[in-house]
Amino acid sequence: MLTLSSLHKRYGSKTVLHAIECRVEAGQCFWLVGRNGAGKTTLINILADLIAPDSGSLSFGGLSYDKDELAIKRNLGVLPDKNPAIPQLTGREYLQFIGLLHELPPDECSRRAQSLLEYFFDETEDAHKRIGTYSHGMTKKIGLCAALLHRPQYLILDEPFAGLDPVSAAKLVRFLQSYLSPERCIFLSSHDLGYAQKIMTHIGILEGGVLQFVGSAEEFASTKDTLEESILQILQPKESNIQELNWLLQ
Ligand code: ADP
Image (cartoon, rainbow, N blue to C red; front, side, top):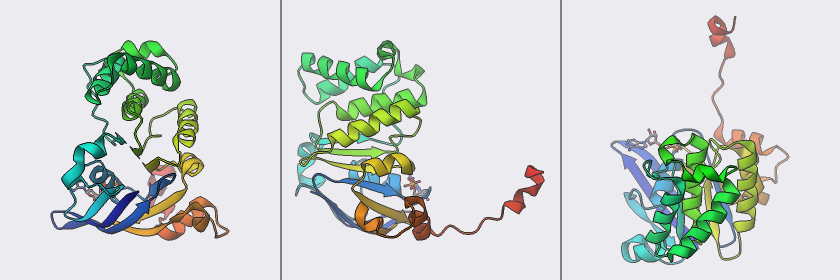
């Protein structure tokens, strides 16, 4: 359903993504994990058509951005790392604006916005405050609501748990588990192993711009190690000597 073929991306002389190949079928949640600077946000931004790859191709159920941009975007919900919500608008105004861009009837927009706000926000009066006054977590939640308003078939989320309190994160996990259906797929980048493993069906480990592992959760869990140990085994962090910090720890 979502197919990435031989994707390459460079910034200047630095290769950020190299020969990325993967397929995310309908009904799957693909979890992209890797250390800072591995290229995760670059890959998500390519999926969301925010930047173009230098080569390779991307297909959403056989459609490509070259020819079918609008058809893809009608079915795509994206929460980017830097959520571009409009700070001058209130949360509710922003959702109404996004809903109208998706050509939803105004009444339907309000109804959907209200139910999303009630689910994700503890205090629905926050919906009447300007987004510019929101905390990091609230900005993330309004971005999530905006990404979901048109009931997208493809959901692409960059660090959705960052900044969320434990109650909101648990609600998001529950929501994503329910949202995943045989017609939909989720592409998720997250450093939160605990939350991500409750949702993912497949995992991709990105290191230095290369997908070092791509496979199902069962394939990944076939070793006896914990998820964290298995990931660290693939990422092979260099030894850090805590004694280097003796000047600070004493
Ligand atoms: P991650 O999301 O995994 O932390 P990124 O995709 O943000 O990684 O970045 C991957 C690499 O690409 C990093 O080395 C980063 O410095 C570099 N990079 C990202 N965006 C740009 C840019 N616009 N110009 C130059 N280098 C960039």
